[in-house]
Length: 524
Image (cartoon, rainbow, N blue to C red; front, side, top):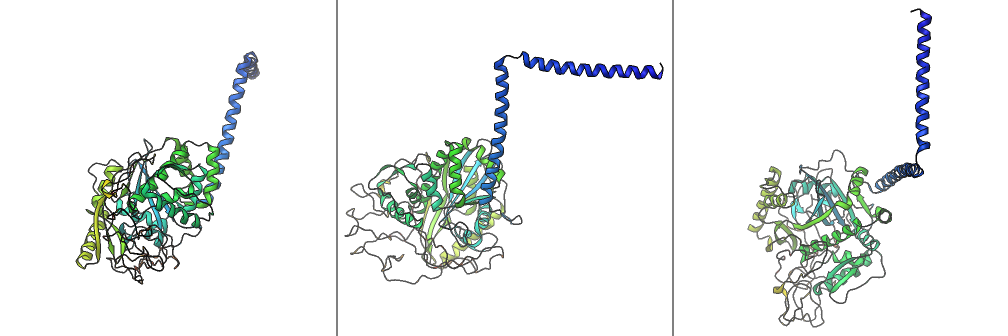
């Protein structure tokens, strides 16, 4: 075949290919023209919806990015959180603080410490409240103190590390809110429905007035009688603060879990538009180290999450006073309580705590034995936390038949007067004792021993040697937020671990100077 013939053959082939392509194009267009009208409309609608979803996704992503940027407080990359892997679970620490300025949390104690444990397969959520007076090792320092002080000395990072090393956990994320944030959130959701018991009314109204003043609200609602109420934001915060004489911190943490659970259930049922409005309201009042991807992943699965249970920790505890300051100790040993936590929350049968947990556990036991030998601990009493029952409803019977007056009423501090009455003027002293005129100290305080002679607070005799905290810890300003065991802001200074002092922490005790008994389950 000559060169000319080959060239002619190639040209004919290319021409045939072009004609075939043209035929295919023509065929496709003809197919579209031949389609029925409803099919054409359906295709157009699908294309428009796809474009809309894409635009909405981009807008939502950009919106979340702006939100996260405003409240994001990343944990330093070189900070050792003492993480211990917990297979199949994400653990997030929820911190509640009594601070008006969320941009300056220096020296702030954590009034609430709640661990949300999320099962990554079933999306079941379990809430564990750590009692704020629990005696633990604080971060990298050799200091043993109330876990609430970890936030003062080293912020949320030291709190996470302290809990991780004591409970063998993998907490690497946190969210911090203040009282005002919770009040605004509950109001934005239309309130929460809770059954108020007769014995809770006095403390609820007391804290409602106090909370309203703290968050700058001139108007507030009070409860006059027992019953089911829709609590507004200020009341919901106050409900979670009820403590003295109505279950103390053990019952208080249960009420907090009720509030969290009810807010969570309402959020699950809300539209994105409503949630967006709430997010805009909350952002300035929340601090978190959750990244945008973390928040998006949690938000996408929000409707699937289910809070199944909750309880307080330590499971087995003892209370006592060291130099008139209250503490909660892990009874039976820290290792025992950590073992129970992994079995109950994570389903890890026959769990064996780490050597770190055993070391901390043995140190606590040794320090307590030494303190007892020196007579430094007073009013010790043991009890156990029990799982919540029907947490989300917040309704049910809380009364303890053995703590009731003959006429069926209960004194605000949980004690019984022989005739079932209070003081002659209708008041009850915070320490559970009766004085003829029903008054306390001139400054409104009462001494832990029940006397009314004003005393000067002294440094606590904490069973540990003075130490110097790591350079990475935060030394609070000397104003402090206080926060005694009653849940009210203290009046004294807060000093770093090296000083091991906490002055002005007014402790109000029961008639026998001891802690409370068993923690009752959430009745609803």
